[in-house]
Image (cartoon, rainbow, N blue to C red; front, top):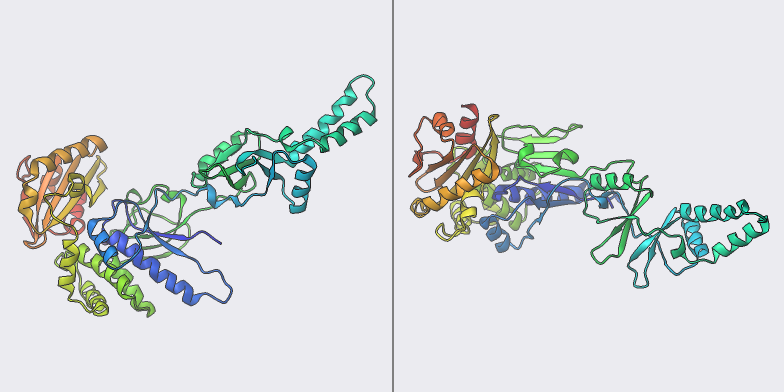
Length: 455
Ligand SMILES: [Mn+2]
């Protein structure tokens, strides 16, 4: 079975990054099942995420009984992508002739040697047996040795146990280890094989030098981003097979032409819903709920200037499937976020934050949406202290936090580091205290990041 295709959003995932991945993986699986020919292997699409679940996502997934997508750390090819699973083994106490028979029967060059409890002990290869045989002829060098004594030693060798010729110093690997590191280690040891062990020291695979002649690439579909700095580590090593996004076109590149759907709409989930309509595959209620929640959070209940007529149509379509009032539904999703006064400071400031490279350095633009600006501003000192710790820890030249009041429809700008960058772009005067109220600013992408990048 070939490896599943990962569908994943950006780092620091927001509700759209995770929901669009869930929705698009669902649609791709439906299409794969529909379009597969008889007896053909059906590809499997698996949604994943690059970080913790936002509270509202956790609330929606829990309410609609949807499995939380797995966390992935990187997209580098792994040992498990090339290993031959379920390697044949032989007990350390078995005779060499027995090991030889197994290898001949299965036409393989090496066997894993195991202890009595099945755990890993070493490895025996045809090469090691051949060396033992050739060394039997060494007796010819000694005075008075006859061909008969060589033959006797050869016969005696067949009766020896596997552990007398096996090697114990073979490279061992774990299946989730990075392939490039495993390859370097494998080429650095004198043996052609490495053994893959699980946590209990049981052999679960074998990797040989011929297995690594071809370097595999993990297949991935990117949703809600197309920028390397926002993608999983190892993105350059992966094969991007599709991109579904509503951000500016950035720097992820591919070798082959791919399906790249980029639309200036309010959310990636909107594009996923449009694809459902285009293929005539209506999402079931739980998927419709996940998608609708993402349109609502990304467009701040359709109030953001990023919300388009297309988003409104999609919202009506999804709300129709669910039989709900879209605004009420959206408000419920926002309510899953909980109160601002007891939210951990790191969540409040950096749960939804993105890095932007200005050339002179990196700016972090964070956004916190609230229905109660005052309760957030009550924590200003704590917030600013945390923002300064981000600057110290990551070397940002500037950190900007937008505290977006979705009822008053504007954002309070709080800025630490080089405030000139923000002040220049907006012609305002952010200081170290109080921040600046920016009416009508709801969208980081459309109204803030673009202006800072252009300034
Ligand atoms: Mn989005």
